[in-house]
Image 1 (cartoon, chains in turn red, brown):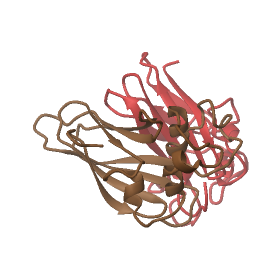
Image 2 (cartoon, chains in turn orange, brown; image 1 turned 90 degrees about the horizontal axis):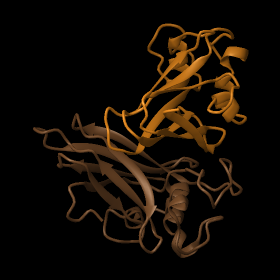
Image 3 (cartoon, one colour; image 1 turned 60 degrees about the vertical axis):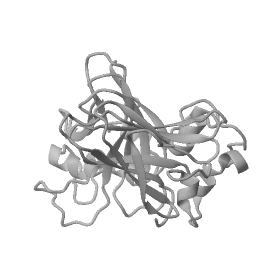
Image 4 (cartoon, chains in turn purple, red; image 1 turned 45 degrees about the horizontal axis):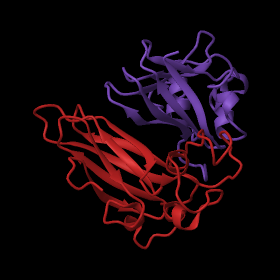
Length: 149
Length: 162
């Protein structure tokens, strides 16, 4: 597989993955939230808000009703991007955000992270790797409001 | 040290739990730089903390004093990455992601500011004496651009306040 994600840090409020692009063709990776094998945000999280967010499909989360979600809602939950309509930004609720920090690699364009949903409406993180071999760190962490990692 | 290289690192913020540097490059090709932790002239994490005390200072003194499970003395690249990039996947000191010893570690973040083609990387390694250091890489600016700019944050996430 061209792009892999290895969990290297695990706390209630932050997960860190090491992303590796081995240089082969195929530059995308999906991180799921269904309890599948790692990398999966439900499997990899411990008790805390990140785990609650990962269970939005099953349990709902604040204004987010349980059941199939949309890309706009996935972006609100995992990228703290509430600009799209529904659920909007009227409810004060903790959401997550993603940060990518490149470590090695000499090619561009650089790494990208977005949120979307799979065919059943489960949120996913979509990683687009840089074109050539290299590594980067992906942090999935809470947007403000959390004390400690 | 950054002497003689195209990348410069200027300290723009120093707190107990976070240092921020402005990185700049004028090179059109790949270039690298190093931020040390041994009390050298800036950019050096120990020097740049000044009177700030906190986990970053303890991390920077690992060779001298040790830090949690990290014994004093020469470190390895795997340990430097565990300490400064929160990457505990390497062998020793910790097993797996949760680690045996739950101690705060630092992370590094890059936020590009200027220069459409410059891309930045940050890694951790050790010098010849086993002192951890941060390795900064720029892929270079495009012809016609004057400078590429990026902020580097070195912070500890397990803390309250800056």
